Length: 515
Image 1: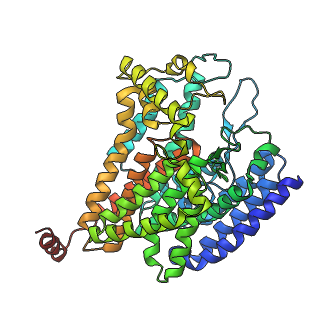
Image 2: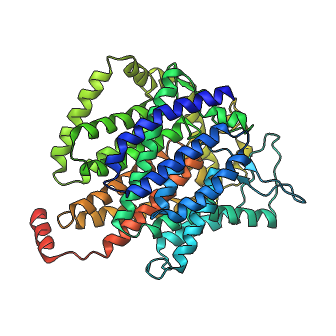
Image 3: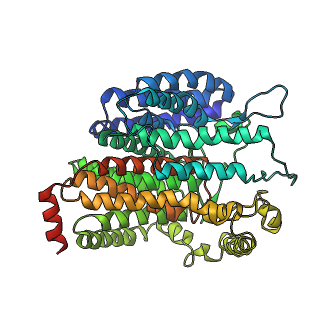
């Protein structure tokens, strides 16, 4: 208890000044009442998480608080995003009588049951949301991938290598969990964010949550102490990846994300959101300070996939803006100067040693493992290209790591192995559809509404960065949530942009610029 209490004190000492510093900035995008409510609930749930002896006591406090906050908040999506990572993913099985198991409960599902599902019910009853009952191509593709996962059952990878067979009970369980974990999240985000203000508010709320995690991540790496691991230990919940991972002799921070890679992805997207939000912050010092904060948190994850995703998001956002060549050149020069300065520090040496192909990690076991995995995955995919091989894991036993898992570090390979070309198409097509839709609409509105166009460019850049990121990592709980949150936000932007007619004058200016 004393160790958890000490960790809580450090968390509060670090988070409190960050919330205070961000308040005047965030109030440009969010009402003060909503911001204070979200912040206060964040503090209460953080303290409860560290002080509770079990998950169930935490849930007893969290459930009514989340239900109340979700109803009071003007934007339950933003409320969800502020609290999505307040504690780590700690799945606990619901006690049952008469059956082996029901399903596990964690913070994400508490948020779904007490924030998202009530919001979905209110949406269905509302008459002022014409798009609530309208189903788009993206909706059908998301549902199609969920249905395919029900039809093609992939047995869990159990420690004793036992192959569990599917059952009617398990199909019902999987359908329920797909709705709770994926579809209701995508549905509420894509429908509730029906105005520009709602989308920006949601982005700002997620940015604040990540801006608080960033200095905590720096603390973890510097002090070599995973603060939130104490919660999982106290609750006796084994969480995969929640151990002390090192790279180039540095601790890879993870805070509440469950893994350094997941934390890196969260911070990379937060940086992407900040690219748009910072344009409304007039003073240069806060813009530089907050960017430095987010980048510092991203650096101490020592996760190469999220680093690459962050670079891709920044480059693509810059390339999609007006006068892209000049701005891209200036950004490149600035990045080179910063990189040159960091290279003379101990942190710079660690970053260099973490880079593949050129650093000390070039010959690491991780790189060799990825090569072997890619070769084996391609071989198995060729044997079952259409609908995949649901027992593919059983044919990859020689790739099982010391942690007892076969780490499919490429989401595309994972989906293709288990669900084939059909599954891969259903999984990736929605992202491609909304990405190209956002780019097209942002370009159309560039001269007519530059701020709204910038919002579309931000979401498109984050979507493309996600496509790059999932080629280097598998999707865990935090990453999956953010994957569908981004999809929902981009769908909302495209829907709003299509409703804005291009004015004659703006169209003429656009034609002149193109000529």
